[in-house]
Structure formats: C-alpha cells, structure tokens
Length: 172
Image 1: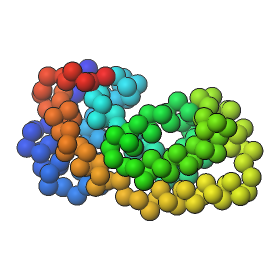
Image 2 (image 1 turned 135 degrees about the horizontal axis):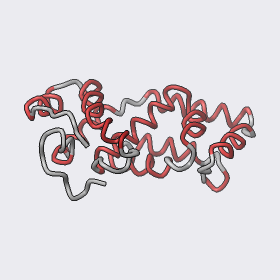
Image 3 (image 1 turned 90 degrees about the vertical axis):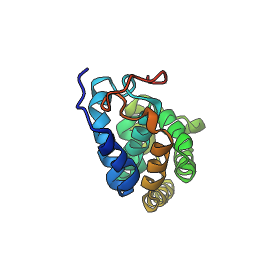
Image 4 (image 1 turned 120 degrees about the horizontal axis):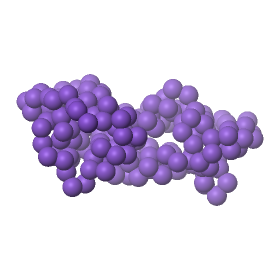
C-alpha cells in the first residue's frame, strides 16, 4: 500500500511541540488510511491500534453515550477497547467502560448488534440514568494528554511507513 510520506522533523514537532488534541488528531489522521485499507487490524502497529481504539470509544460515547458505542460497535470491539485503555494508562476510562459493560448479562456484550439493541432496549429508567452518569464521567475526562504521552513512549512504532522506516516486528 502506498502511503503519504512525512518529514521526520514534522513528525517530531507534532509529537513533542504541539498541543495534545491537535497532535493526536493529526498523527492519527496520517495512519488512518492504512488502518481503513486493512480493516483496522492489519497494517498498523500495536500502539497505533491502541490509540485508535481509545479514540473510537471516546468518540462514540461523546457523540451518543455508551448506548451508541455498544449499539454501533457491538461486543467485538469492547475487548480491544478495554485492552487499549489499560495499555495507554487511561485507567479511569477503563473503569468506566467496565461499569458500563456490567449492564449486560455476565458483563458480556454480544457481538451481534441486534442482540445488543434488544438488551439496551430492555434497560430500566434507573439503569439508563446510571449509564448517563457514566457518559458524563467519560466526557469530563481528557484522554489526549495521556494519549500523546503514550505515543511519545512508543514513537519508534508510529507512522513507520509514512516516515520511510522499515515495518516493525510488532505491526499487525
């Protein structure tokens, strides 16, 4: 797959001299075509995948709450999001997603989105109010400084093709 090349100095400036929100957004935007072309698992390094999973989670919850996250994504992505939150050190968000997952029988979010929607539709008003509180807890947290710190810790594994570097052993 062809990738858009970037200058190492630009990469370093984004990673070390740019506001976390902007830096994370721009860096992720550079590997996004690779992840989209490969189904989001192949072609990206583990750190790239972890950051992407966190952004999917906070984006979905920020847009429509945990009900939207579970309804749009189903249970297939939940394990990857949990692992990503743990790996990136976003432990408060990991605790929130754990609490949200607990609304499902045996804390198991089905992979089938129709089954997810049936279970979400059966939640009581009290349960929905508790989920809403988890949504608000999620929105008060800013994951971008920690994501940028994580990206700095793993900079050798970020944007390797775009920087003209040989693919890493850990790329999936």
